[in-house]
Length: 127
Image 1: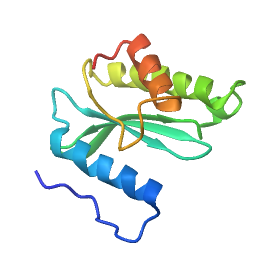
Image 2: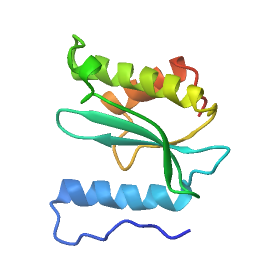
Image 3: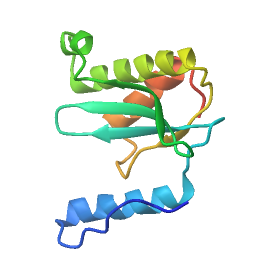
């Protein structure tokens, strides 16, 4: 399977480091029909989680802090990330997914990314 990440040359050092980590991770991680990929997209304000089957190119379940019910959720960004993890786990289980491969997309496994992973585990996903 080919990796579809553009090599961006003129990035700031922090973004370049994340890009290198993302490429390095995607060499090893691929989602299949029986074990799809749980990919995290993190911005400064929001976080998005998607369960993706890479063989077919379909998103099976998704959740984000931009949804209306989570916008009204009280708490800091870490608490919202944990809630997104629980929500994506519920939606993935409804789609028939029990185990996933965790793709942090070059983000460090700390803070909101770790909280989302803990929420998904507490919601019933195994990875």
